[in-house]
Length: 221
Image (cartoon, rainbow, N blue to C red):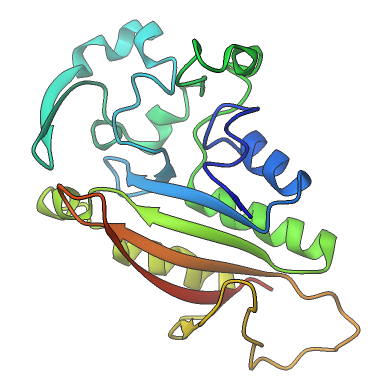
């Protein structure tokens, strides 16, 4: 069972609160969508347009950042992650994207910031240690071609985040099934609970609804 954007029917999507609730409700895998900031950090948003998922419109200091862009052939007007540094983005608060459909979620508007992928990896490591079993993350990079043209590629920082969390620069090992994580080759006392972050990466092709998935595992002990 996958917690799509966390428990998005109960908490604002792509927040640490949403991810935690999905795990607490029994999700086997928790999904993230990744987009970059102006200074190259990966953050968890379904789209780089943050107009509907944050309170950016309530910040007069960012009024001049509103823009109209063509993203993979689709015109959008709003505020976009690639126009904000991480420090600036962290001054915003997350909110419910579709309040008319999920009015109860608005009770949690403003409770969380936009999480970085590094923060999610640390959360997964902590939860894995607490539970004594791996926490699986299902990662989708959004608009990779668009961002690479801007000089903000997604793949390299994604690999760097996972390698840094693992404490090693080893090449990720392939996994054939998300329900059966491969064993790590690292030696470890078998009496110690194992925790790992397992990241199947999905890259959506521009202008299509299809995607190509690869699965890789980075231990996070």
